[in-house]
Length: 243
Image (cartoon, rainbow, N blue to C red; front, top):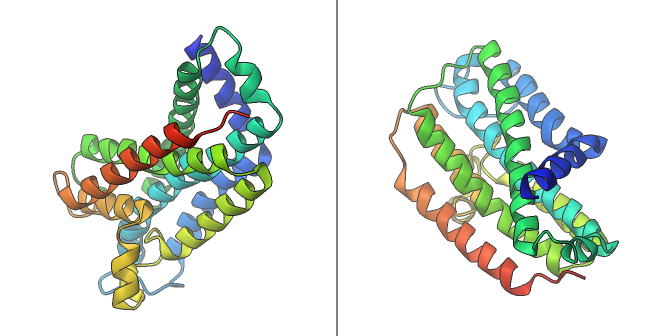
């Protein structure tokens, strides 16, 4: 039952044009445009395409996690809750924990497609990743949990329209100030220190440490992502309202 529901959830995610734009097209466009043109000061040593890709490719992978696990899931779940879909599904033989597991499976399936697409585009543009891919995969899983928790918390506590507005606002704010496209060094030091503890910044920094610098598994980003994931998922489990 969980596998069937996960397949259905994945198909529903990929059918929505606006969700496809958010999860697939926007990260791809950012990668292509910003790697090809010197539009943002990415710091010393990143003036050419190779240097820009070294910074942008891991950041865009973090952006993909944010768009699917947080923004897309929050909006979809919020409207399902509003229209009574979650209530009806909760009365079926599929347990509520199974439904949440299926949603998680759908997010991971969509993320897999995003990562394959974005990695293929980055490699075609000349990206040369280093480091252990299993460490990068672990960071992405931790980042998924760290972004999914706040998304479910929003969807389970706010009205659908408020969830839509809040999720899109957070996405835009983290796109600009989440360390995925613009280096945190470009912000004032006190602001950068705060932004560094966000899930998108931690994930992007961790992926850069692994894929650009060849690090094994950066402890700082792992701890930040673990704290975000555990705290937000616990809060979502405690306060989520099904109707």
